[in-house]
Image (tube, rainbow over all chains, first blue to last red; front, side, top):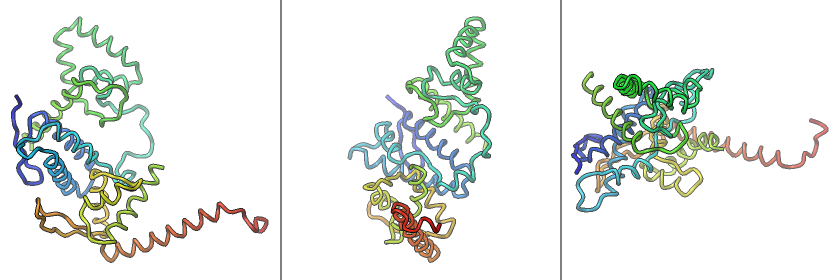
Length: 192
Length: 109
């Protein structure tokens, strides 16, 4: 059994199961991030919302009233994540000088819990196994402290775009990514 | 190859929009059967850039089955850009095929 959440996509109401809602939320947040510096950000997001709605409705059975992950996932695949036109990528992306180390981001691919260890290892140029072993030792000695630290890092360290890392995408990291993204979305809505 | 394709997409979209007034699924369908198959996530940002550059404009048209749709068409500037790109493309084609031929007066170069 899943809770149903009603959302507005391009100013029309749609009902989504909560997992589909979390997935769509994280997808739209990533799209908004990629369009951060785009002057037509609001309009493009509205176009994309409409595309998502159209694609999902097309995939629903006649008697179906709620959008589930089963319709949403292929719909998002068909729409594809936001890609900026060639010239705009260079105009808006970071200066040409490549940073010495990759940015500190959680990497979902290959992660076991949320990708914090993987992200830290990637950033510091360390072996991920080493970072995990240290984290486990700390967990053993600090118990709750380490759990709290991990949860804090989960919330604080931004997520790398999907496809950044290599390795298997496990269920737990994907779910926690969706949950954290959803939580951040709620928080930013409360703040503004 | 993919950056070449990405750069050419703008030209192709101008061409499709230039042929007649279309909405986004029309453009996707036209491109789907070519090696330039693309997705909404790519097309909407591109169309908004072309609109900012005043090369295309859209108008809303009612639809029988859903919400109103944006139909895109070329502006005069867009038409001019398309003509210029077409010329450039032909010249480029000529250059590329010429370079494949054995030079007839290489000594004078």
